[in-house]
Length: 80
Length: 350
Image (cartoon, rainbow over all chains, first blue to last red; front, side, top):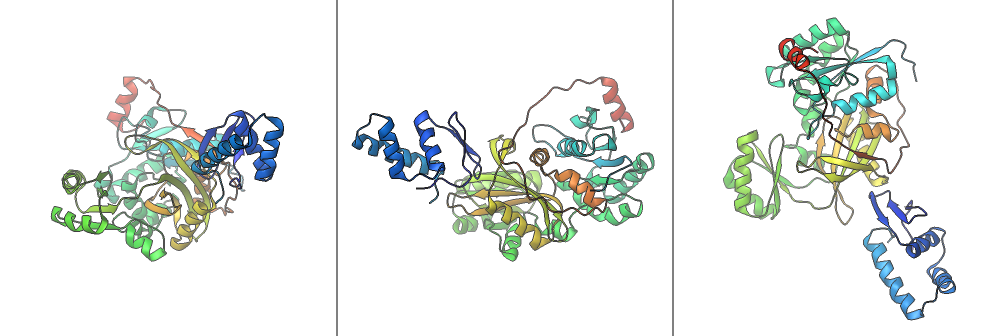
């Protein structure tokens, strides 16, 4: 899973896709995940990172992750 | 870059900064950004209420010129008069309808010392919406299928070939989306009454509307390419806000267009990007768009570059621009006095 090239993010969770002109607002956790994706971390590394930081069951994490992935895909922010 | 020592005088049309604005005021703003105090702007107007006429910090002096329908002779006669007073260096026409006359007059203008930087008549005709489909086929550019018709009875055949919905377009302006044959017939009558014949019936393409401002040097090079996505569209289909984009496919499309046609001057490509990422050219406007100041704001000042090219300077194609630059158009009630209105109405000068 890879974010599209040149997706711009800010600390406040603002996401800008320079290829389409679309912009989005991300909540703090989504913003954190996107930053980690931009740093090149793998999906398993990010999930591990989340589990270390937050109290979340495996099943819930997977469900939320799939939902988040769907949103990123819908927003055209992922490389195919 | 050559330093311009003397004040250059640039005459600009399209001062109608209204709800469906002409590009003139934006062009002037870009020129003033670049040339600062070394430029004098002459406005060329058609109507007495074009806002640019009254914006004295934008236009130094305005002269009315005859409508394009009066012909090239009437235009050159008026321009000679203005030139005697103002010593014009360059003219930038900004309306589709006036370009025919200005293109025709280019050699005469050059002999009296006025430069232009315009497409050839062949380039101008080829991208006309009546010829657009063949233009796309010739240069292998994606253009929606269309049919050129003169009779309402031809709509049935169009609908069988292009399917509903389809777009019924006027010869010069206006487009109506028709979902049924009845709607298409109504659109046909409305547009033919307003703009005459033929009527263009075009395949309906859905997607994201993107416009590209382009400056071609006439030798196949795109001096500048700025893609912009409309963020807010008025009921007349005009961009009220837009943002510069970064997309190599858009840049390459514009470069292909310029190299295939050797386009000379400014133009605007109206693009529809489908969900599959296909880029359809919907229209090619043969002059700068009204949002052209965004090109200057993003780092590629197309109007200033056009003036330099017209004056014989060599300009290397721009390679960088700022992505994510936004323009938001706004309205402003400019206050003037009836004496100003009287001067332009009575004397054709202000």
